[in-house]
Amino acid sequence: MLLCLDIGNSHIYGGIFQGEQLSFQFRYPSTNRCTSDELGLFLKTYLREMQIPIEQIAAVAYCSVVPSLDYSVRSAFVKYFSKEPFVLQAGVKTGLQIKYKNPTEVGADRIANAIAAHHLFPQKNIIIVDLGTATNFEVISANGSFLGGAIMPGLQMQMRALNEHTANLPPVRIVKTTTALGQTTTANIQAGLYYGHRGAIREILAAISLEMFPDSPPIVVGTGGFSQLFENDQLFDAIFSDLVLQGLRIAYLKNH
Image (tube, rainbow, N blue to C red; front, side, top):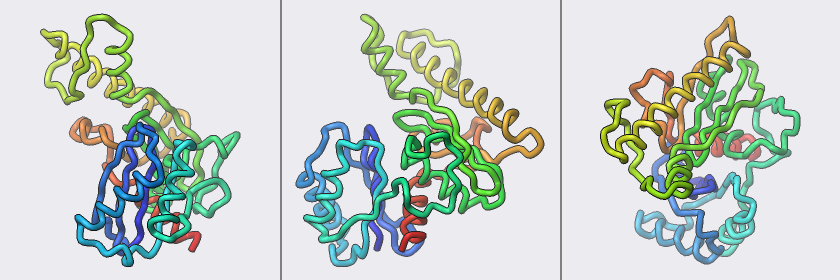
Protein backbone atom coordinates (compact mmCIF):
# COMPACT_ATOMS: atom_id res chain seq x y z
CA MET A 1 0.00 0.00 0.00
CA LEU A 2 1.08 3.57 -0.73
CA LEU A 3 0.07 6.34 1.69
CA CYS A 4 -0.14 9.78 0.02
CA LEU A 5 -0.70 13.23 1.52
CA ASP A 6 -1.47 16.55 -0.17
CA ILE A 7 -0.55 19.27 2.33
CA GLY A 8 -2.81 22.23 1.53
CA ASN A 9 -3.51 25.56 3.17
CA SER A 10 -6.78 24.41 4.74
CA HIS A 11 -6.54 20.62 4.91
CA ILE A 12 -4.20 17.70 4.62
CA TYR A 13 -5.93 15.50 2.04
CA GLY A 14 -4.77 11.92 2.29
CA GLY A 15 -5.35 8.60 0.61
CA ILE A 16 -4.16 5.02 0.61
CA PHE A 17 -3.61 3.20 -2.68
CA GLN A 18 -3.77 -0.52 -3.22
CA GLY A 19 -2.09 -0.74 -6.59
CA GLU A 20 -3.87 1.81 -8.79
CA GLN A 21 -7.00 1.80 -6.63
CA LEU A 22 -7.52 4.64 -4.16
CA SER A 23 -9.15 2.58 -1.42
CA PHE A 24 -9.26 5.08 1.47
CA GLN A 25 -9.47 8.88 1.69
CA PHE A 26 -9.38 11.29 4.63
CA ARG A 27 -8.87 14.94 5.57
CA TYR A 28 -7.11 16.53 8.50
CA PRO A 29 -6.99 20.30 9.21
CA SER A 30 -3.68 21.92 8.39
CA THR A 31 -4.54 25.36 9.77
CA ASN A 32 -3.47 24.46 13.32
CA ARG A 33 0.17 23.91 12.29
CA CYS A 34 0.14 20.37 13.69
CA THR A 35 3.19 18.74 15.23
CA SER A 36 4.74 15.50 14.01
CA ASP A 37 3.23 13.67 16.99
CA GLU A 38 -0.27 15.00 16.32
CA LEU A 39 -0.11 13.99 12.67
CA GLY A 40 1.59 10.66 13.35
CA LEU A 41 -0.93 9.66 16.00
CA PHE A 42 -3.82 10.72 13.76
CA LEU A 43 -2.51 8.57 10.90
CA LYS A 44 -1.95 5.55 13.16
CA THR A 45 -5.42 5.95 14.67
CA TYR A 46 -6.97 6.21 11.21
CA LEU A 47 -5.21 3.05 10.07
CA ARG A 48 -6.38 1.22 13.17
CA GLU A 49 -9.98 2.34 12.64
CA MET A 50 -9.81 1.18 9.01
CA GLN A 51 -8.25 -2.10 10.19
CA ILE A 52 -5.10 -1.58 8.13
CA PRO A 53 -1.95 -2.98 9.77
CA ILE A 54 0.78 -0.35 9.65
CA GLU A 55 3.12 -2.99 8.21
CA GLN A 56 1.04 -2.98 5.02
CA ILE A 57 2.06 0.62 4.29
CA ALA A 58 5.00 -0.09 1.99
CA ALA A 59 5.79 3.53 1.08
CA VAL A 60 4.74 7.09 1.85
CA ALA A 61 4.68 10.20 -0.34
CA TYR A 62 3.53 13.77 -0.08
CA CYS A 63 3.37 17.14 -1.80
CA SER A 64 3.06 20.40 0.07
CA VAL A 65 2.30 24.09 -0.45
CA VAL A 66 2.81 24.83 3.27
CA PRO A 67 6.58 24.90 3.90
CA SER A 68 6.09 25.38 7.65
CA LEU A 69 4.54 21.90 7.87
CA ASP A 70 7.20 20.03 5.88
CA TYR A 71 9.35 19.23 8.91
CA SER A 72 6.37 17.90 10.90
CA VAL A 73 5.15 15.75 8.01
CA ARG A 74 8.55 14.21 7.30
CA SER A 75 9.18 13.63 11.02
CA ALA A 76 5.77 11.96 11.43
CA PHE A 77 6.55 9.49 8.65
CA VAL A 78 10.03 8.74 9.98
CA LYS A 79 8.96 8.48 13.63
CA TYR A 80 5.70 6.57 13.27
CA PHE A 81 6.20 4.65 10.01
CA SER A 82 10.00 4.28 9.96
CA LYS A 83 9.97 5.46 6.35
CA GLU A 84 11.63 8.32 4.53
CA PRO A 85 8.88 9.92 2.42
CA PHE A 86 9.03 10.63 -1.27
CA VAL A 87 8.45 14.37 -1.75
CA LEU A 88 7.14 15.79 -5.00
CA GLN A 89 9.44 18.78 -5.46
CA ALA A 90 11.81 20.38 -7.93
CA GLY A 91 14.30 17.90 -9.36
CA VAL A 92 12.18 14.74 -9.29
CA LYS A 93 10.88 12.98 -12.41
CA THR A 94 7.40 14.11 -13.42
CA GLY A 95 7.06 13.23 -17.10
CA LEU A 96 6.31 16.92 -17.77
CA GLN A 97 8.27 19.80 -19.21
CA ILE A 98 7.83 22.78 -16.88
CA LYS A 99 7.63 25.81 -19.19
CA TYR A 100 7.49 28.34 -16.35
CA LYS A 101 9.80 31.33 -15.99
CA ASN A 102 10.78 30.10 -12.54
CA PRO A 103 9.85 26.40 -12.22
CA THR A 104 10.47 26.38 -8.46
CA GLU A 105 7.52 28.78 -8.02
CA VAL A 106 4.96 26.21 -9.22
CA GLY A 107 3.03 24.63 -6.34
CA ALA A 108 3.65 20.90 -5.98
CA ASP A 109 -0.10 20.26 -5.91
CA ARG A 110 -0.44 21.92 -9.33
CA ILE A 111 2.29 19.69 -10.71
CA ALA A 112 0.59 16.61 -9.23
CA ASN A 113 -2.68 17.62 -10.90
CA ALA A 114 -0.89 18.09 -14.22
CA ILE A 115 0.85 14.71 -13.98
CA ALA A 116 -2.45 12.91 -13.41
CA ALA A 117 -4.36 14.82 -16.11
CA HIS A 118 -1.64 14.22 -18.71
CA HIS A 119 -1.69 10.52 -17.77
CA LEU A 120 -5.49 10.37 -18.14
CA PHE A 121 -5.59 12.34 -21.41
CA PRO A 122 -2.32 11.74 -23.27
CA GLN A 123 -1.68 13.78 -26.40
CA LYS A 124 -4.46 16.21 -25.45
CA ASN A 125 -4.37 19.90 -24.59
CA ILE A 126 -5.74 20.24 -21.05
CA ILE A 127 -6.91 22.95 -18.68
CA ILE A 128 -7.35 21.90 -15.05
CA VAL A 129 -9.57 23.93 -12.72
CA ASP A 130 -8.75 23.11 -9.09
CA LEU A 131 -11.34 24.58 -6.71
CA GLY A 132 -9.77 24.57 -3.26
CA THR A 133 -8.55 27.31 -0.91
CA ALA A 134 -7.59 29.11 -4.11
CA THR A 135 -9.06 28.38 -7.52
CA ASN A 136 -6.14 27.40 -9.74
CA PHE A 137 -6.02 26.94 -13.50
CA GLU A 138 -3.26 24.67 -14.83
CA VAL A 139 -2.57 24.46 -18.56
CA ILE A 140 -0.87 21.44 -20.13
CA SER A 141 -0.12 21.04 -23.83
CA ALA A 142 -0.55 17.82 -25.78
CA ASN A 143 3.19 17.13 -25.64
CA GLY A 144 3.22 17.27 -21.82
CA SER A 145 4.39 20.83 -21.25
CA PHE A 146 3.14 22.66 -18.17
CA LEU A 147 2.57 26.11 -19.65
CA GLY A 148 1.32 28.08 -16.64
CA GLY A 149 -2.17 29.15 -15.66
CA ALA A 150 -4.11 31.52 -13.45
CA ILE A 151 -4.96 31.82 -9.76
CA MET A 152 -7.88 33.56 -8.06
CA PRO A 153 -9.31 33.46 -4.52
CA GLY A 154 -11.37 30.37 -3.79
CA LEU A 155 -15.02 30.36 -2.76
CA GLN A 156 -14.32 29.92 0.96
CA MET A 157 -11.74 32.70 0.88
CA GLN A 158 -14.16 35.05 -0.88
CA MET A 159 -16.89 34.30 1.66
CA ARG A 160 -14.54 34.91 4.60
CA ALA A 161 -13.31 38.17 3.08
CA LEU A 162 -16.90 39.45 2.93
CA ASN A 163 -17.55 38.41 6.52
CA GLU A 164 -14.28 39.71 7.99
CA HIS A 165 -14.16 43.04 6.17
CA THR A 166 -17.77 44.14 6.62
CA ALA A 167 -19.88 44.86 9.69
CA ASN A 168 -23.13 43.15 8.73
CA LEU A 169 -22.41 40.36 6.25
CA PRO A 170 -22.48 36.96 7.97
CA PRO A 171 -20.61 33.78 7.04
CA VAL A 172 -22.78 31.51 4.86
CA ARG A 173 -22.86 27.97 3.53
CA ILE A 174 -21.47 27.79 0.01
CA VAL A 175 -24.16 26.19 -2.12
CA LYS A 176 -25.39 26.00 -5.70
CA THR A 177 -28.20 28.53 -5.83
CA THR A 178 -31.18 28.20 -8.14
CA THR A 179 -31.66 31.93 -8.72
CA ALA A 180 -29.26 34.83 -9.19
CA LEU A 181 -31.64 37.13 -7.32
CA GLY A 182 -31.46 36.66 -3.56
CA GLN A 183 -34.10 38.06 -1.23
CA THR A 184 -32.21 37.66 2.03
CA THR A 185 -28.69 38.74 2.90
CA THR A 186 -27.60 35.11 3.07
CA ALA A 187 -29.15 34.35 -0.32
CA ASN A 188 -27.54 37.50 -1.78
CA ILE A 189 -24.09 36.35 -0.68
CA GLN A 190 -24.64 32.78 -1.85
CA ALA A 191 -25.82 33.94 -5.27
CA GLY A 192 -22.89 36.32 -5.64
CA LEU A 193 -20.38 33.63 -4.70
CA TYR A 194 -21.84 30.91 -6.92
CA TYR A 195 -22.66 32.93 -10.04
CA GLY A 196 -19.60 35.13 -9.69
CA HIS A 197 -17.27 32.16 -9.47
CA ARG A 198 -19.03 30.33 -12.28
CA GLY A 199 -18.76 33.36 -14.53
CA ALA A 200 -15.10 33.91 -13.67
CA ILE A 201 -14.24 30.28 -14.42
CA ARG A 202 -16.05 30.44 -17.75
CA GLU A 203 -14.33 33.70 -18.73
CA ILE A 204 -10.82 32.51 -17.79
CA LEU A 205 -11.32 29.19 -19.61
CA ALA A 206 -12.46 31.02 -22.73
CA ALA A 207 -9.53 33.45 -22.61
CA ILE A 208 -6.87 30.75 -22.09
CA SER A 209 -8.39 28.55 -24.80
CA LEU A 210 -8.36 31.45 -27.28
CA GLU A 211 -4.77 32.40 -26.40
CA MET A 212 -3.20 28.94 -26.29
CA PHE A 213 -5.43 26.50 -28.19
CA PRO A 214 -7.40 28.43 -30.84
CA ASP A 215 -7.45 25.49 -33.28
CA SER A 216 -7.90 22.59 -30.86
CA PRO A 217 -10.34 22.95 -27.94
CA PRO A 218 -8.75 21.62 -24.73
CA ILE A 219 -10.06 19.00 -22.37
CA VAL A 220 -11.26 20.82 -19.25
CA VAL A 221 -10.82 18.87 -16.00
CA GLY A 222 -12.36 19.89 -12.70
CA THR A 223 -10.95 18.89 -9.33
CA GLY A 224 -10.83 20.10 -5.72
CA GLY A 225 -13.39 20.27 -2.95
CA PHE A 226 -15.80 22.67 -4.68
CA SER A 227 -15.65 21.16 -8.18
CA GLN A 228 -18.87 19.17 -7.65
CA LEU A 229 -20.73 22.45 -7.10
CA PHE A 230 -20.41 23.13 -10.85
CA GLU A 231 -20.91 19.54 -12.01
CA ASN A 232 -23.94 20.29 -14.18
CA ASP A 233 -22.88 23.72 -15.45
CA GLN A 234 -21.10 22.49 -18.59
CA LEU A 235 -17.78 23.91 -17.43
CA PHE A 236 -15.88 20.63 -17.26
CA ASP A 237 -15.47 17.64 -19.54
CA ALA A 238 -14.60 15.49 -16.52
CA ILE A 239 -14.30 15.83 -12.73
CA PHE A 240 -11.77 13.88 -10.68
CA SER A 241 -11.90 14.74 -6.98
CA ASP A 242 -8.73 12.73 -6.27
CA LEU A 243 -6.60 14.11 -9.13
CA VAL A 244 -3.78 15.40 -6.87
CA LEU A 245 -3.38 12.04 -5.10
CA GLN A 246 -3.38 10.18 -8.42
CA GLY A 247 -0.64 12.49 -9.67
CA LEU A 248 1.38 11.94 -6.51
CA ARG A 249 1.10 8.16 -6.96
CA ILE A 250 2.28 8.38 -10.57
CA ALA A 251 5.18 10.64 -9.59
CA TYR A 252 6.21 8.19 -6.87
CA LEU A 253 6.25 5.33 -9.39
CA LYS A 254 8.28 7.36 -11.90
CA ASN A 255 10.95 7.91 -9.27
CA HIS A 256 11.00 4.36 -7.87
